[in-house]
Image (tube, rainbow, N blue to C red; front, side, top):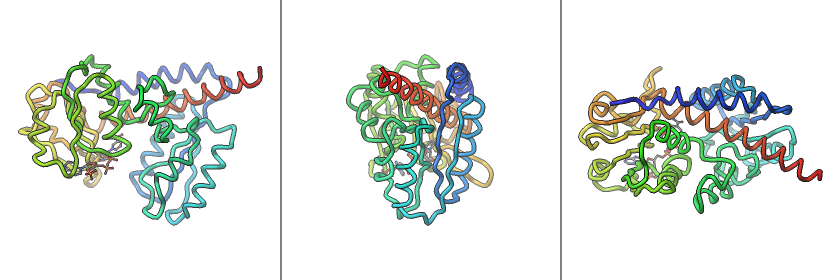
Length: 287
Ligand code: NAP
């Protein structure tokens, strides 16, 4: 078994970004909108800010109370859309239940959509592939970059994705499909989950349930990508029983240190590409 080391890949991506940012006169600015005081969300935003600083990207965090109205949040986004100094916007999910997440995502200018969640950006890679769009969905793109970094063949393989959320499961399935995998997507209503996971050459698990995937549910030699983040006290666990599954897998991501760091690196990658695109567009408009 070999580890798919997300930390190492993230460092490589961040190093490349640092180089790109150092050549930019006007530094990219990422606005992060944080609603409420969910401890995990606050940690994610702080971590993203830390890596922005490492690469030279300017980060701005806008904290709003948990009871902020949808109207007020839409106004904040509209102001960020108009602000020429902001290159990219990221709204930290989940949002409180009284706010319509889809409405908020649709309000972000697609040219500033750091998470690649806006239907216009999402539709581009679903219709063609992600090379057609300047941004890519952060977690799924981090996963395929990790597979590619370790020269894991995707084309012709059977990929099984457990979870069908808009931010991980569905776009991960799409990116694997774009690369020629035969994809099965499982979810809460899937009957006999082990019958599907056992068929996987590449198994991606994004559910949020500690130890959901046990060794007997995995084929020998499978590549296992564990997206899950489950906090127990101060420790973090994935969705996969790492100790036992790692004895059967050919490659596996650790939690922490797997998908998490590549997600942040991809988000920052998107931020820099959006800033470059805005600069190129402004230059063309001047001519
Ligand atoms: P989500 O929106 O809650 O989606 C979870 C998915 O799991 C749903 O599609 C659900 O099915 C499915 N599911 C639930 N119980 C299941 C079961 N027993 N068997 C099969 N499928 C089941 O979560 P998410 O946003 O995709 O996140 C998933 C996990 O990844 C979470 O732990 C999250 O913290 C983590 N995450 C990590 C990163 C990172 O960077 N490392 C990024 C994003 C998310 P239904 O649709 O049928 O309900």
